[in-house]
Length: 261
Ligand SMILES: Nc1ncnc2c1ncn2[C@@H]1O[C@H](COP(=O)(O)OP(=O)(O)OP(=O)(O)O)[C@@H](O)[C@H]1O
Ligand SMILES: [Mg+2]
Image (cartoon, rainbow, N blue to C red; front, side, top):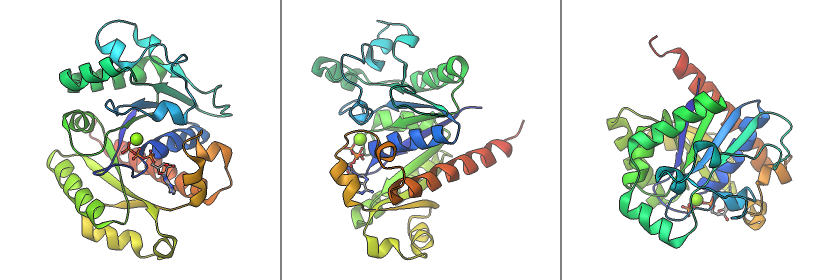
């Protein structure tokens, strides 16, 4: 069974693309088949972290939506490229061409499109987890991605604007009957030490906090040059995010098991 997950945040720069790429690799290390999709159509960047050049990415989601290519043309198998010993990571990129970005901003995607992509990945690639990396804030495309997904992973920093925005986002998701789980990212190390932090923040934002990722100088200075946990598997960032990956598996398996048949 395929789980569709949106990685989102109310504000920008919270670590969505970094989390998506690292999470995909960690889920693969746990034996899962993962597809990461760059749905940040206005400012795509996930391919940079995966070290996928524009030449390698010959076709994009933009080509597929306008019937310029087959579905298989936009699905890149990165398993060997990333030298993954277990599982699999596939990548679907968005166009970096200015005219394509303008076209898709003007015309947008449909909810049907998101579902179609997830269904094809499930059926034709036997994917366990589809992860959509999104643009920050609640715009039309993000809402559609959220609507078509099973679960949202909301990232937030310990910043009052992020806290307020994450509360609002999770309230909106609840209205639509969607589950949201929150991960705190770039947490100042002194705050991250408190074992009460997840429960305290959960109470304020009225959504479960499933992970706490401190701010690490090494992650920042890695500067998106590759998937951090592949370069630094023993780093605490990698082990903390592995715990989030295991929690995501646990929670999504539980909710699948409790679904009426
Ligand atoms: N835990 C962390 N500690 C330190 N730096 C981090 C951490 N997580 C992410 N970063 C850094 O923060 C920067 C922004 O991350 P990223 O691009 O993933 O954010 P984003 O939410 O995808 O941004 P956007 O909203 O623009 O799409 C990157 O330089 C990344 O390396
Ligand atoms: Mg991003």
